[in-house]
Structure formats: structure tokens, C-alpha cells
Length: 82
Image (cartoon, rainbow, N blue to C red; front, side):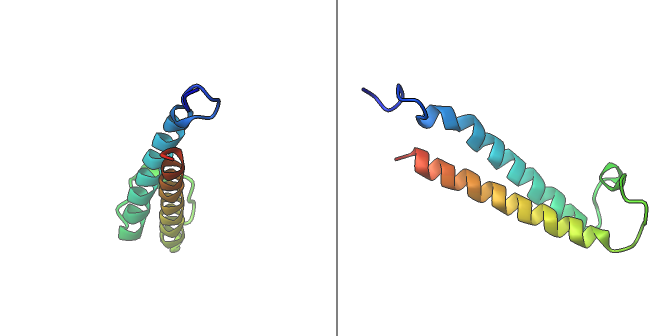
């Protein structure tokens, strides 16, 4: 019996790994843009107080989420390679 025929094989996790990697890369890019103050205006649409320093918190959250998602994708890819 091959590992591909067993439920939960490496092939079933591939879409999740790709999704985590894409979300992680986008979150890192957006986090860096927030730190730089160059985030697109539609990302600041929910902020009613302009210039209050919220971009630092949003940038930090974006970077943390991006690192966590990329680490999750790396860890799942490493485990599925076994």
C-alpha cells in the first residue's frame, strides 16, 4: 500500500501548505508596507482616527501573522516529506 492511498497522505496537505505560504507572504508584505507608512488607503478604511500610530500595531500584527503562516507552511511541508 502506498502512502498516497492512505487518508491524510502528502497530497491532501498540499493546498493547505500553498495557502499558508501565500497568506504568509502577503501578510509580511502588507506588514512592511504599514511600517513604512505606504499601505494602500483601502487597508486604513476601518481606522477612524488618522495619525494615531495604529500603523505600527497593524504592521507588527501583519509581520507576526506572516511569520507564523510561513512557519506553519514550512513545518507542514517538512512533515509531509517524510
